[in-house]
Image (cartoon, rainbow, N blue to C red):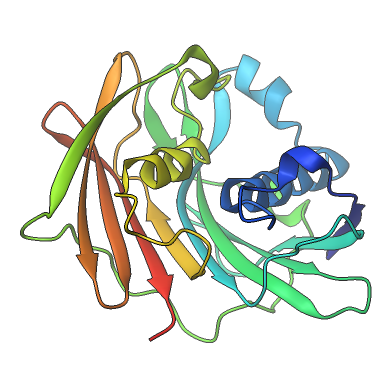
Length: 240
């Protein structure tokens, strides 16, 4: 089932360049996905109170153009039709009033037992409640991300209480904000054409994280560490 909503941007959604912020794009997608789950009878908040939750492990986002006005936007999301084992794929599009696609994205999620701290097999009843679709927004699978062998710099950033979500982890969209904060001022932040984020390990129960970055011809690459543990890989993409 394709699930669509109209989103009306507000002033808080725009960054200092006057464009819809990168983290805000993820929040719009995530909140629309949550309401899609609710409509399918899979209430994420209620399930988490019972110890079962969806954990997002991967974002892949391609940006055609970031909106620079408060004109309404159409957000569409759906679960992709595939045989579930330990994961599902969810796709998203963001379009303007004319139907022109501005952003496309996919996320990968696993069903997680918070008490046992393990990934669960996704049952067919839960999966089929989403009425999955065959379409995917990308023609091929994303290549695997690997941490660089060397970095150009690093910074330590404190975590705030507001960074922690209802599962007790740093919320998945917050890592993007942390990565942008860690990049040097010489990196232009208004021209990214996409990004990948992969979360090998959740950040929790720490007061700060270390962000290490390297600058490449195709965009900066940031890794988030909790102590010596690699928790998140973020690769920004720029036009060559």
